[in-house]
Length: 498
Image (cartoon, rainbow, N blue to C red; front, side):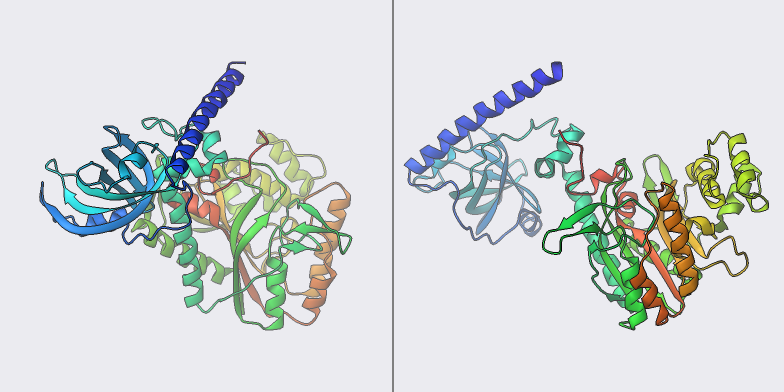
């Protein structure tokens, strides 16, 4: 009830502010001034002015005229002092009648915090050392009808920050920095792979059959074709078709994937990944390129190999350990699951306090025990290799053990960062794997993969030995920006309906 009253009071307050500011819009128009004009030609950014005139001594003035535009973040002394913020930084404005051109004072009186304005004036440094622009001409570019959050507390409500990211970006510099770093990370990934000879490609987002990963898909409907389609859960099968076709021996794609699963600090229903495939390579090569790519990014973004995440320091120095999943499980539990069948594995899991349904496949039991007993202990990056066949329908059988595959997942700080295979290229083996997945789906597994006849047809034409790798960009950005929630590094995360 108290929360409802707060929402009502906030809404009432906003309506009052909005009404007052609309009245100011009308006053501007009465003066012949349009509060939402079309254009303004700025020739400087705040950061440029701060750097260019850093040499000015206290009290020194110039005759240099600059034009800049931005948002008003504070107004002091009835508009005499204004803090103006653009995307590069802040600068102080001095709006005094001795400098303002005729008619500018009338505009000044109708300004509010949050308004976007353009100004022209001369640069100086105040006697107290503050770099300032003496405003001569003032143009309102957009009248803000709602007030910004209170200065000293800012936008602290996490829920509002995610729902109203536009306000969050205005008020919280840390949010801006994280999203800008995200853009830089994606740019660096693209540059790194291009220099390695990988060809960037684009594959469909709408799939006739969900595939490429074990996950529950989103379903949509195409009216003209009168058929259901699926938002892609992974681009894997299409990228491998390009390898079959010989478009290039190395391809990659950076794009969105969609999985109809839970929401948490590490999961968002739509997320960004980079997937790459290289002909004539195997999963050992994919471990190498994972380390090369991630350490390159860490160096570019952080400037060294050690990253502070919360209260933990992660050391990305190469080489990273490579240990099999069963080896790690035995190390942490004392149990060797390689010596057990599925029934024995279920019983052993229960002795560890892990409740496993009767009839669960051996590989899923191993995966569950690993998730419960090993994952939470991981801090520094490690390649968890040789994963069970039961949970790896697209990976080649391990060359030394038929119940395992040549697949690894890279873990950091207890969560998966990368997933890679020696890709399965035997059409008959792949068909059997798909058939097993179909049976699992019929038994109630809504994440099981479907039979994909066109992909099998592509394999019939011959796919070379291939290594494939997928890296979750959102989680990588979280690591490199010390973001504790995936929502902090996605501009508009998926949220529950308000």
